[in-house]
Image (tube, rainbow, N blue to C red; front, side, top):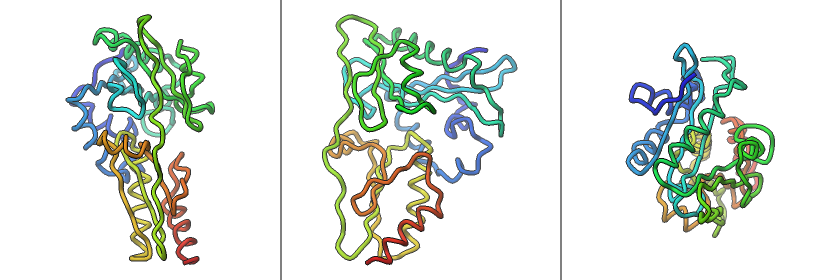
Amino acid sequence: MQVIDLKDEHVPLYLVCLEDWSEEMKEAGDRKEIWYNKMKDKGLRVKLALDDDGVVGGMIQYVPIGHSSAEGKDLYFIDCIWVHGYEDGRGDFQKKGMGKALLKAAEDDAKEIGVKGIAAWGISMPFWMSAQWFEKHGYTKVDEKGISILLWKPFVEDANPPRWIKEKKRPGTTPGKVSVTVFVNGWCPAMNLVYERVKRAAAEFGDKVVFQEIGTSDREVLLEWGISDALFVDGEEIETGPPPSYEKLKEMIEDRVKKL
């Protein structure tokens, strides 16, 4: 196994989170590519893990914390580490040390850059981006927001811990209409998929639905709202993980339209 920096030949694979076999990833559109082109000159770092046959099985992406959903100084932020775990496509690469190798490579790289530490977000439940997994590798919890846990590993004694950007406000409602608002940053194809599906679903109901997109790759917009990626319908936040199907989103909007 080896860990390498992202190369041009691997960019298309990276943009679909190693799931080039997935029809869902195609449905997610080009927002990840737009985000990547914007961020690659702003400190975005991407590394890939290859098995002994040279097959890409894992990836990690990390950015200066000023381009994340957290606040901090002189830190990098891991917003995604993923080892392909499906039998479909390239196969299951999990539990073979790729995640650990990717994490160490990112930490070593961040130290060379000269930042004072590295942060990551984890989920309090034991699946993708598990907070417990980061804790096993020396990370400490410093903040939480729902099931999203903010963790960090300082490299020097005078490093200051990060904090989540706090929610400032939520979208309102429109009298006589169903209001659908999507906050989308672009970094995660899963949320991009939600955006594409709910936008299509909302369009099915014409002027009975008011659809609003709020792009949070603009830092000022993110700070204004304190929300990075989320879906709201009539002011109520809707669970988006894993991404709801198009049919489920359409049915949810239709139920509300019927009550107008």
